[in-house]
Length: 155
Image 1 (tube, rainbow, N blue to C red):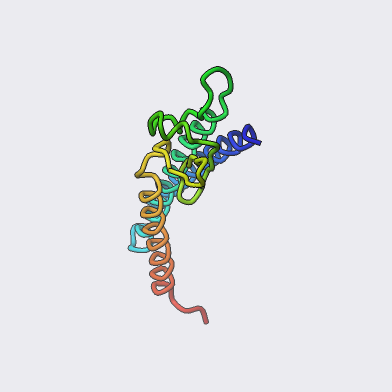
Image 2: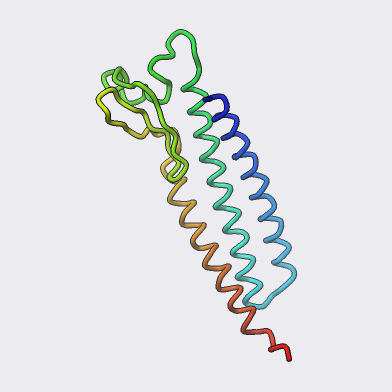
């Protein structure tokens, strides 16, 4: 199952990179098409959306690397790699791990029932992704509203 998780994360990160590239190209194309306010807002929405998708894909790559380290078997593979950074006393209590996609993080489960989040995914990924996504959505809604106001009614 964990190899499937790693491959899924890798595929999702690749898909995110492709989507971010497509949004960036569309954003730059929109820059040269329209110069009125709705065109600028649409451009901003596309480019900010591309940034949000790219950041999320970056976080998925970090998460995939943590899963790959966790599933690396052999000598010295217990406790799982990302969970060792908390120190030997805490790491000796680790019995497993969980992965969360919103917010993106790698969590180590402890034998006593608790858990802690590792620093495998940079702390800026989730807040920056959410912030860029919200601003992109706001720009998209404003661009759509502005474009409708500017168009003359159809008789």
